[in-house]
Amino acid sequence: MTTTAADRQKTSKDNNQPTEPSERKTSLLVVEDDENISSAISEYFSRAGYNVTTVQDGLMGVKAALEDPPDAVVLDLMLPKMDGLAVCREIREKVNYMPILMLTAKDDVVDRVLGLEMGADDYITKPFSLRELEARIKSVLRRSRTPPNTDSGSDEAPVVRGRLRIDPARREVTIGERQVDLTPKEFDLLRLFAANPGRVFPRKYLLEKIWDYSYEGYDRTIDSHINRLRAKIEENPENPQMVLTVWGIGYKFSDEQ
Image 1 (cartoon, one colour):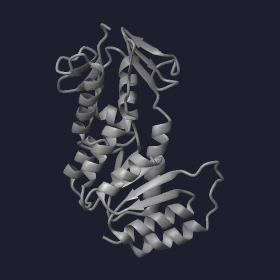
Image 2 (image 1 turned 90 degrees about the horizontal axis):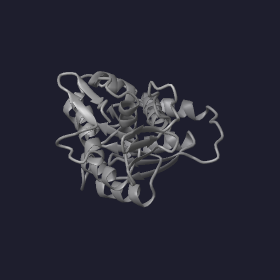
Image 3 (image 1 turned 90 degrees about the vertical axis):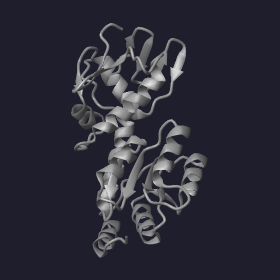
Image 4 (image 1 turned 45 degrees about the vertical axis):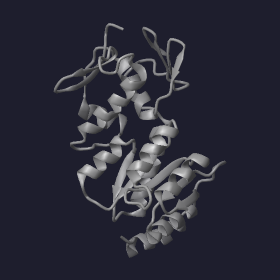
């Protein structure tokens, strides 16, 4: 797949627009084996004020992400040496959090769902507009830095449920004396649940609230994130006592904590 002439025209036109000054450039890692796409993304975002690093295969992508963690990753699904799903999974296992936007040449819901289940924050299907890609990247960065409203009157006050303590200001979770490392999505899910014990949240609501994006038919994404969250906070994830399943609807936080 190659970028369109319209994309290149937009790149040139956008380059004439002034960028807002910042103390530190946002760093972007592009893992893409198509040189035309990689070069177009690099040129567009470099001129937009980003610090861009590009690599051409999955193994190099993992290495670059772990050695010098960027602010965000643009990750192709189809890569040599290690595919994008494996790269995403490896990054998620080694780094607490790093915003990942996945590129896919397939307009297939299965690929997108798998990417989101592996921990990708968003996806975009080729061919795509560079402007749309920039908007998506800004969105995942904004969501990673700004937690959603918890529907609680005191957003910054710590939430305590039994031995569980959630500190929204520090974005820290502890269970007793043990600190729990959560990704922003896991943290936001837990914070929303714990701030509203007993309230049932349908999967569709959680997708729109936490992802700030409507993923039609992507209920499995929520289930995968809940399973990972339970593995980190529950004594027995197979018999959860905090985050409970409401069959046929969604999830809730136990009101007995």
